[in-house]
Length: 208
Image (tube, rainbow, N blue to C red):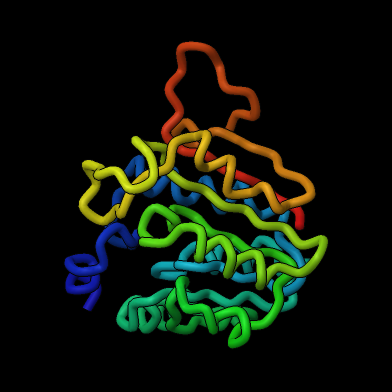
């Protein structure tokens, strides 16, 4: 079951099949550790994948969160998450991040997490609108994305629709009252880009 899941779920991370030193695994785990201090109340992890990140957050922030909903569009991935990363405060369910009915189905959240998702969706603006509708006033969105050639342009990654430029990424958050931008290098996050350093991942922390 696990091997089959790895073969046809694209970039979804399965920690139990990867070495602890795997760079992609460490980067993904780092994003959840980065986001953990912002988590409180009712929480959504959109495109939660195999559920390891939801489980990390639920254990680390068990006193601060009341409920965590993990949503992914793949049925087998959700089944795996339920089996391997079950927790009393987590509910995993199948859902499409671009479904206009999703906000009505899921309700409002105090915190929304979205890591390495937006590059996979055909309409990033519709995706962002869904997130905005689901976030409570005063709530926090933590969202990451790889940088690339820009919206509508091909990438070398087979599972990516496109990768936004840093400028396009920043423009996604104009509706938010407060935005802090960070840049990920490996497992570290930097607030101020350094001259001569190329950053591949952007991380935005936004308050509605």
